[in-house]
Length: 176
Image (cartoon, rainbow, N blue to C red; front, top):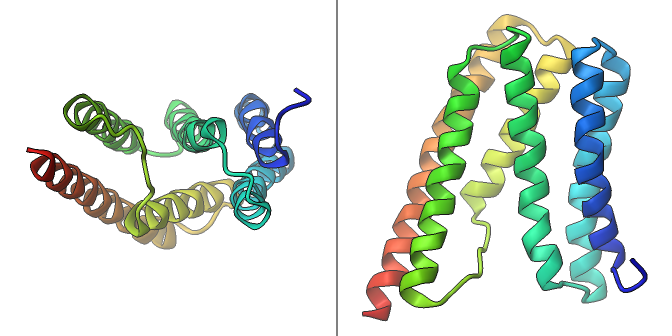
């Protein structure tokens, strides 16, 4: 652990926090769930900010950071669906998006040798909207606002997924 950068330690802390978030959500300990979720949001911002500011971007961080995000978001949506706080289709859409992006990354890597995943503006916006939906559920935001946020999230997921597909195909075609 002594060779790990501060950003990587923050990312690992975020991964470790996910089971605490899930357990506190299931136990209906909203204060703890909200606190852990906000901790995850802050460390997600800080790890990237510190890595850029200090020049501490690492392959480990580039690998772990998106995994930490996916682990948190997917776990939250599955937990909310299991608790019947959201419809099952929401985690299905979120998981499907991530499977499509992963399969696309793997195909692109196989065809081009490029294993770098660069988040797009649409991808970052989707993550922010997904986090906003989760915070809205945790804080008990009214049904109408949550409804609007959920469908905004759905639209964002569709746009960002097609954006990743478009750029992946473009890169593959350039390698031919």
